[in-house]
Length: 383
Ligand SMILES: Nc1nc2c(c(=O)[nH]1)N[C@H]1C(S)=C(S)[C@@H](COP(=O)(O)O)O[C@H]1N2
Ligand SMILES: [Mo]
Image (cartoon, rainbow, N blue to C red; front, side, top):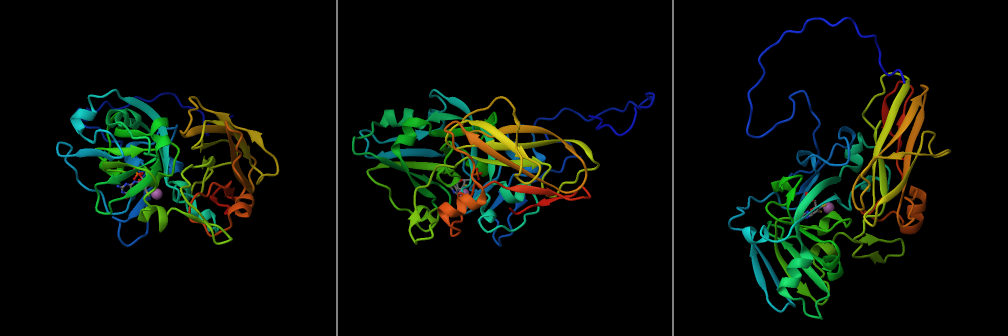
């Protein structure tokens, strides 16, 4: 592959200096600078920050680089005081304290979480400075908690209970209605992320996690679940998080995050130092199932070849793909497209716009690409 640029010289003696001491809580190397892209909104309490997709490796997002979306800032909640109330159309309304939840049978599962506003600039393409800026409202963690199904069995859902409303303890009182089937399927009441307590930004001490569904419904700082017979039509499922179609109707309760892939290296803002071998690497995920195939094109979609999927390939989790590439110099358009277990193929922007128009702000999962320029610098191809 000859990516090495010089032959190794004879080894020289290296100075042996005393290193730093042990520490109670780790920090990354001071040479590392990968950081979240902050939104340009006036109030950063009502804003988002994005995972620097171009700088992360593997399938797990470090907790400190997990994207954030807060509608009213990050509340500081004492876990000793926090309670989860489950009530509504149930036989026995119950309050769970944190220490009670931690006694119950737990599960740890790897799932992505994606804001449905992710990739939103691709509806009306505007070139973005980096993969993170364009598509970084998605992250993937190992979440630990109690299945919501277990808690619902404890309270006993009445036959007329068809939905539940989850409410957060933050100032915006984020509330979303969710079909009760999701609780019986895989909804989690999560208290840990990547082996330690949730980060405050991810909902400490407790959040709802709806695998594969739009991030907004995974209510953070969760304090209440009310079982109801029909959706409540809350602010966040009426004024927002609906998708306006060309004929004036809107899609509502579009929970599923459909399959998407993003090449993360090389990607916008990066530079190829020299022609020759460069591994293409990226992430693919589907809110419905596991990814079965990722194809890569280095000529803007004229020809395609299969990428290698790194193990493990898990349903509703980021899947890392790689593709060996030899850059001959000159311009190249790098594109990826994925398929999931259901046979669903990630659409082109033209196909997506044919189906949905361009009024939407959410659920853009169109194929996207990066342009490698003759000098090796990479920019958004804004396909
Ligand atoms: N209570 C509460 N829950 C919330 C939000 C919020 O502002 N308050 N933001 C939602 C949105 S829009 C998204 S995309 C996800 C983001 O989760 P994260 O910040 O852990 O990445 O949380 C959701 N849950
Ligand atoms: Mo979101």
